Length: 591
Image 1 (spheres, one colour):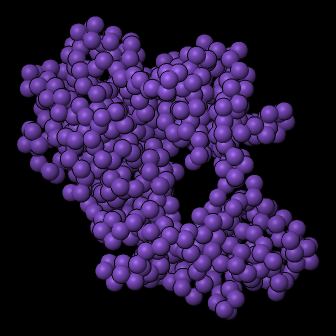
Image 2 (image 1 turned 135 degrees about the horizontal axis):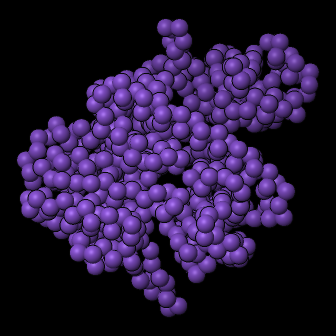
Image 3 (image 1 turned 90 degrees about the vertical axis):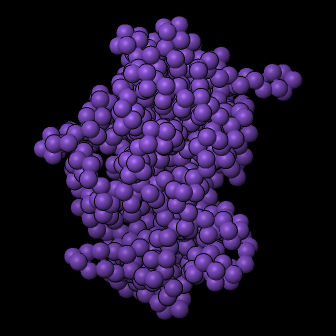
């Protein structure tokens, strides 16, 4: 799908920002492009640390939750922690478990079985918790939509604290009034609930759990160093849950990455090594695409208790075995995802509804744990909201991924009568429904969809046009101060037109990388790499410049091949040598 390139045009006193903050005007411009509006906000973006987090007591329900949890610990009661089976749930659960035990409390961890039970707290967990003597049930990364389950837990004699970060479900009346539906728990802590004064609404579930444990530590006089032992978990959960890396989330991930660079946690060290990484070089990319998916695979394909065993493991040999098992699960998950993605794309290309603005795809024989990942892949291909379904015992179970201009949960709420279960937020949702309702849901979602053709066209936001002579090691070092990069804080993207390709080679074991030498109109040369499909790039050159032009560039001859590229700069390290290179992403011909 052809992309639309849009160069930011946001204004500010870049001379002042550069002078006051000790940064280049280019970096100041990128800060403005990220939504930073004032000099003070820019200073906070660059230099804010954990001390800048808002007062956790501003969260609605936090004081009640803290009082109940600390009271349970002091009374010698037992707490049942009910987590989810994804990264956020795993690390939120671990934060609560370690935190309660550090304060002298007793806790048990419970998670639902992904296939048999699905997302969130359920009656089986409540029964087991009650029968194990737990007087308090504490949810994390789930619970905000568990209205009947919270009532049942209280009927079983358990107090209930819900900590969550998902959207609160609601009912809209014909007159336009909205009624929010909150669980009848003893305390509900969720920054997104109505009336919550906490200023930052985008924390993941682990972030909400961490703020509770911070206050618990202070109440029990636990040293600050113990709080820092939880930072690694925060970083992995925040990046893996794809919440925006801005504001408090960016602060948490920065602190977590610094902690990971010097971590001594046996389990994390074993997994980092099993994935072929070095702890000192970990970035948000590694958390989102290597470490996070490895933990996620446990909850998707096996028993999530394997992940908790690794996190609590202190024996290096045992940890290595557990890490190897987890890595193998992740490889199996990748294979299953690849197969399912290819099947989904094939179905769409042959379907009469291929041009729908919202795509609903049913797969057969695909493990339900990977449908969300497949939905994400399909969304990237077609740049439109996507739901992928697979067969379940009582109908179909699906997962959706959305684009910026479509609120996925808000789209589902009017169709809740077709669904047996659903939940989520703007960019992702999970749902179950009877098989016969699939086509009805497809029709209704598309009839209600207001996405325009312009909104369905992928947009590449360009920070600036940058001649190659400005791409230096100094610039790359300065840009690193804007990291960690991810959702909500993308890596800076530059562009230049008429970049001549002086040489082009397809390299790599799978012939899946393109290496080039580029030259701009000022005569500056740069090494470049492209990780997209080499066949697509060479087909583009052939279609725009002819077969003869492609052959010349493959022979490192001047063939007049001069496309425009979007790119970002990086340091390439190979055989102990460092050099500057640019990573090319999008390309087009400007005549």
